[in-house]
Image (cartoon, rainbow, N blue to C red):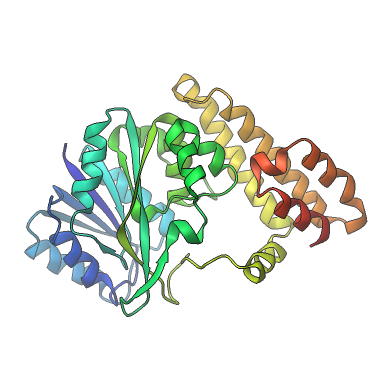
Length: 321
């Protein structure tokens, strides 16, 4: 199978050299790197051009005329890939030398696998190890991983995403169903949810990506503490839940269009139930706290908080925050 790497960049000159060097060190070299630069102003595209001249494999550099944002930039890079397997690659991380080989072996071992993902080890801005793992920070526990391996990952991802694009690869055959990325979705969460709806997901527990945490990155990874969770819950206002509802409504429309390709017969109904819950949460956050008790209790007794959100934490946040 031919391997493509879809690399998205934007003003990434500070860390990009280390990532490019790690691609060149792969024990199984990719067949091509498709690097799409999202209108950088710091010389990132020039670094990519220099790498294209020196790399031991084909490198295609696409320069965007205007900034389109991370998800759209990655989607365009994925659309340009010609390989059978497409690896997503962030500009500021570092890949273990055996990453491509290990991922490819998982695809080769299971013809039904559409996605492969691994854990990530967290490093700081200097590249020093922090001792943390992304799956522990999320958390993405052993029981959740068993759920994914059993074919029910999208049910988990109705609650929250656990796969990081920087450590995700997919079969090119899924691309027609995954693109375009619906409005409001991050590309990695969408590829995980929709890709997992259509094909098996294989997980590698070893951290094959060094995930760099630094002030300039878009998402990052932090350990979950009570203080952080309460702070996040307070930021989840009516507008936030309206966006969640819109996002999953778009997902439901795509699942309905895919019809029999969706492996889990209950997923479409669960996705529509997620939309209804999010709309109700938006209404609760927009109203007085006294009016929240009945709808919150109804969702709790109906099991929606545990099936579609974070269980008791979501119930308490809707009721009191």
